[in-house]
Image (cartoon, rainbow, N blue to C red):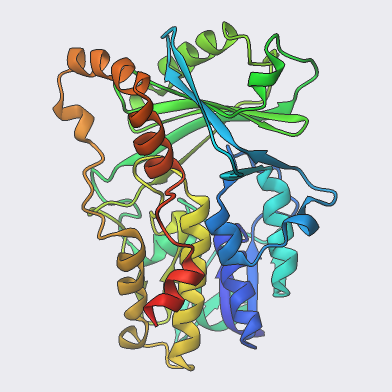
Length: 380
């Protein structure tokens, strides 16, 4: 039977970031994933400078042979509305990446042992460790396999998703832009178009030769209708390339909330979407996955081989310090009458202060937050 110190189930940004930090500390880590990388992973896909700093990412190296679109502004508006506001910055505030490339790069950079194309079929405790697929024994188990992570299901039996927990559902596609839209200059700027009920938004993000189009909603039942409405609206804009007939894909994940999954027990931790850490305002999951992966690795390193619950409990405190306690009420739009919401949304997004300082700086860029590495150094 193959053995390792830490088995990480899931090779996305969270799992690979955790493996990278563990390998730097000399910990024997294995990453297992059902997919073979590079995988065809669709995501709006932007990373902020804070994520770049936490990963010690060499932008020039990454840009060589991969897609990396500098983001220096956003267009914001309301789906069905006529007013679109463009907010520009005098610096790069984000980078648009293709997640299929980004995940593969981070996974290779981790220098962890890889078991790819191998889905997890069985998990069982054996003494103080774990046996997975009756083929791999590990002292420590990490769940980093997204919303449907088998480790998250095992840890949160009988229900992997807490009742009434806020669930984001998304539908999107990424495709080559074969032709230039009427407003080519505007097409270079990522667009965020909000629904009038304030329960989600659609986007159109340029990534070099590629374009990612999609919607995310906190109301799963309404997704088909609102998705069709967004596409009709987007086709009428001058900055969107012809959509053609791309392969639309759907996925779901939890946002950070008080009704969240258990994230640890003796010998096991969850991170990223497996732990339900996406930001409630924007739905972004990449940066929380990266940061929770690094925090999980630090917790394991500090435990010095003792993986009982008490030794791993600091991880929960670190998540709370970084992402809050999950008490943010993401369903607040439901408390406001629909007519009021429909009237407020265009007004709010038409105000420069709201569009820039609240929607973009606070919700999407989280510009006031220090990079994780700097925040940890300052905390001592």
